[in-house]
Image (cartoon, rainbow, N blue to C red; front, side, top):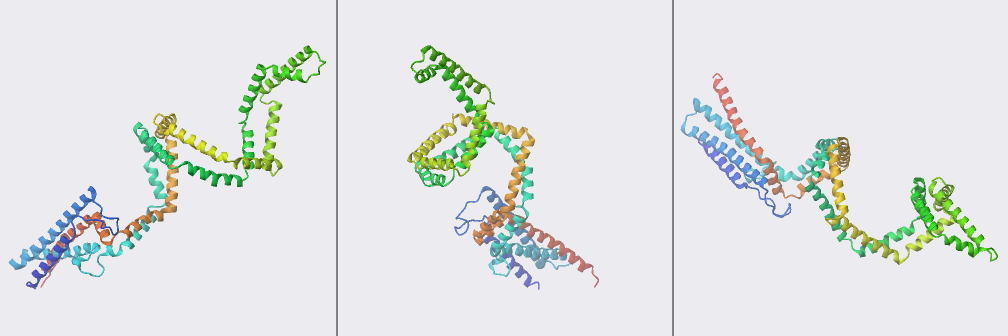
Amino acid sequence: MRVETPGFAKVVEQGVTMSIEKTPSVPRFGDGSGIGGPAELTPEDQERARGLKKMRTLALSLLILATLIFLSTHLFTDNTGVWGFVSRASEAAMIGAIADWFAVTALFRHPLGLPIPHTAIIPRKKDTLGASLSAFVAANFLHAEAVSTKIRSAAISHRAGKWLAKPANRDIVVDRAAGGLEYVLARIDDDSIKALTRNVIIPRLVATRKTPVLAQLLRQIVLDGAHHKLVDLIVAEAYSWLGDNPQVIDEIVHNRAPSWVPDFVNEQLANRLQCEVLGWIADVRDNEYHKARQALDAWLVDLSDDLESDSSLSQRAEEIFNDLLSQEGVVDSVLEIWGSLKQLLREAIIDESGEVRARIWQLIGEFAERLQADSDFSRRIDDRIATTAGDLAESFGPEIASVISDTIERWDAKEAAERIELYVGRDLQYIRINGTVIGALVGLVIHTVIVLLPG
């Protein structure tokens, strides 16, 4: 027994050493087969690789130490007394280290390169593991309560307000927005706008009844009183113009009066008519409840009813709109409006000295200040963001989590094992170290029990 044991231990030691030496100390990810080609390790990954190599060396050193002690006690002692305890402890430590090395190695590759059943678990089961991990993440993390609670605790709005309060950051936001707008404008040419107007917008407008929309707009304008300012302007301008041009009424009276009527009568009639007309217009101007104003409101409401119904007026209005839309000048007008709008946007927003850009910058600052000062306002925003994110996570959690399984599925089996080992392998080496230490303690306990047993 003593003759065979050292040889067996030496073989195991050499096998373990060769297996560890074959494993690259720094994983080389990417051969172009599964992860998109060769990729350099980041500084963090390089640090993980160094830590993994260090822990492997430590675990292997303990195994070699246990093996050397085991060999020494068998070669140079009679394994009695204290040496018996040392021998059994080193033997159990060596067995524990080898067993745990096998367990850890079996996760990532075949130990000693031998195709032992139920080894190289991660390379063989990576797709199953990826699907299970994806399902686990979706079920336990990507649900409404977990996501919304995390977002609320993050105080996103307050942090955003603090970040936007800095002028340099506001410059970044405005510059990015202006750059995005310029990117969009640069890729929309006039031919596209022209084709869109002629082939899509105009045919859709012609095929759609427009008078009901016009009727609703007209009725809402009357209900809101939005036309009163326009009426005030028209009446005021009419009063001023008629007051500045009294000869208009004089000419009407003289041209329509019989030839036998004396001129002084026409003048008196014209003056009287001038005063009455001006007085009536002034009354309309100053009295917002004037009968003329009320009559105009009633007429506009009736007009909206006629436009909304399938009346002759509505049909005639549709024909007029369709004729106008069918004119080639409509497309040219849209192009002119689009060109003016692009120029306006560039001057107002993209240009660094634009007024709109400056106003946007100021509004962002005011918004940032409110986010920090008004806790109720920021909390409402956080609640909306959290609720929306929670609903999205609840609805699309499995699809979002599937990126895990899809990514792992694209990995090469060997690269997947190396990548995972890089992140968890250092901690797994503690299993080997603990196996060595615990094995030694168990060996001591067993030998102690054997020594203390009678006979």
